[in-house]
Image (cartoon, rainbow, N blue to C red):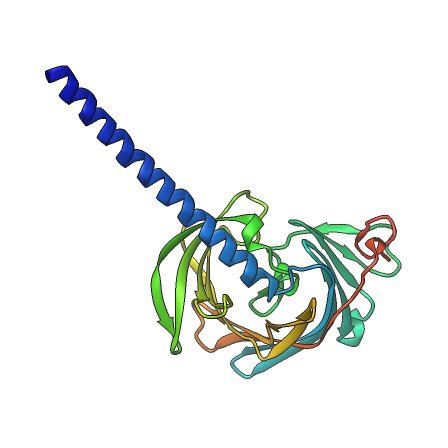
Length: 250
């Protein structure tokens, strides 16, 4: 009888462990699915073009920049339009690798996606977002941001090549759109906070889909320093593979 009771207890313990493991797996799957939907509204899809206008504010100083971005899934190329001194230069990103291409240079130059582009915007901030593939996601809680009920997720980079080591991400429950993001260093230091607007719309397979129209990035230390990225001229496009090839992009 004692052995039977021990076996019964063991079975119960194993069932509890299995149920907890299954629940954790389901939670991870749900978080990844939500991230994929949020990524789509930030450029990670099959063929899009848009224009980004950047304005960086730091006390009395304002800097501006303008680029055209062509993106297809986890690849993108950004072409500088302004300032005039940078016109025609390009940045190519494939997965988490990035290169700078300048007319007259013999070959592309490898650069870091983490490198500062302007103000608080990094090189990778102008590219399509691929959080679902680049990060392990864990659901934390639910919070309201500016009246919008959101999932709160903790994202940790799968490799050292990701742009940010850790991200705290708020995604709206009703539309699966990234509303807010906090970006952290590997040591856990808050670097900056971003807020997103989705006043643009793109049609995918005949279905209107919200698309990011603004990303405002606030510095974690200097409260009067921030960068605004505005997205315009968004359109679905059939982009040839040569646009993302190191051998042919010039």
